[in-house]
Length: 136
Image (tube, rainbow, N blue to C red):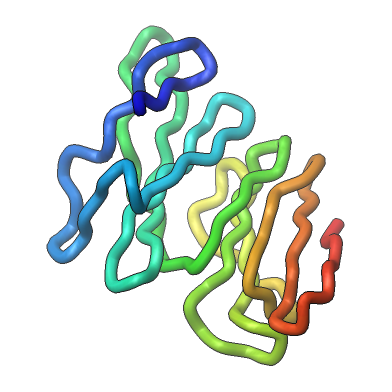
């Protein structure tokens, strides 16, 4: 399977992965919003996060490693990334978000086990009891 961006250009896995991180088409996945691609790679059962922003002015895009590890990731239509972290809290694991242009995660109260991006700055999560919540 070949993954492509929204312009049809084939995507490549990050070329220089940190020690202990592996990537394969079987354990990584891609989510996209507003031309930015977030690609994840597996490390000890968690996700290491990478971003591939669109190159500007004809410059080629470069993979950028994003800090932190996650159990799940989703991206809202405005490009806000949402993760389910690896630290256990009531409801599952810590929820965090990073808006476009930010470089640090903002912690969201409550916990969840799954996340999916929605509309602008919106996410849907499922907690460890199966309850569904919308953050906006």
